[in-house]
Length: 418
Image (cartoon, rainbow, N blue to C red; front, side):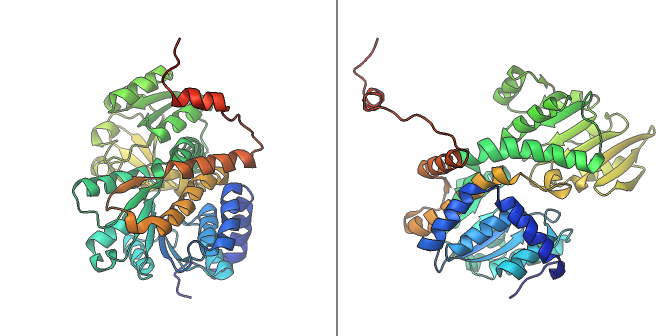
């Protein structure tokens, strides 16, 4: 089997970790059982560019059980778990092209190797497969039925392409499914980002000032959990509605120019470029810790920091210290990349259970409906969201009420009033 991974001898360790994560993914396991019987993806080629983690391994196994031919590469150079990659290749016969710490040239080589599968369906986490198909491999875009996209950043890119009428095939915005962003972005990113920051630094959050850039679903989750750890949280925003919401949720809201001198910790979760810039670094206190949990490593202006830094050194595995004039030090975590995956293990498996259930069911829906789809960005069908919600509740032993016939008539009608 073609693959490019770090070390096949890591497979036994990876297999145990995959099994551990899989124990807490009941929804995806139920889907896998049905897929194994029904084979809804029989003959379908699926190329995936996702974080190569234990949870992703469960998704790849589910797609394969459904009859799909799959290949996987990394969606971030630092997020690959090399033992998981080895186990997927050695234990489950799934081609993987991913090595933790790979350089940019290798990263794009791996993307092209996955696209050599000539996929009918793409699965993206940041839209790099779609981008490559629209720029470097346009000859292969015509055979793609549709893609799925996992991240806010990717959905933003794809909606822009659709507006400009350059999108060559439909894409399902898995990120916009309520069972994805309500839980993955809020609870998953919230917990795993703090996990990454704490693992990288071993610093106490209680009693510090923690600046969260962006108050989308990821920012909401991060701010709430940082507050729960005892930090005083400041939120920066560009959206007046989200800024108002942050204020109503009890957080202090400031422009980054004002927050820069206050923060002990900073974390960007915006999906935008250069949210923390040179002028902000110049205001930060000695020892400030700066991280990013947005998909791409563009939210922190590292080039601007390099220009004003007198020296830099690696302090810990995922900590780079920049020395600035005035004997100040700024610490950048994980090279400005996704801190929750670069210095921790990403989202907990119980959260990714719902996100990857969306991916699996979206792939099935594409296989069944691709002939009628237009070249635009689609929201995950509401019936898939409800199906996942019901399966998750069932796995948690939670029961809910159902409407009575009288209630159904009332909600469907307009005659009754006060």
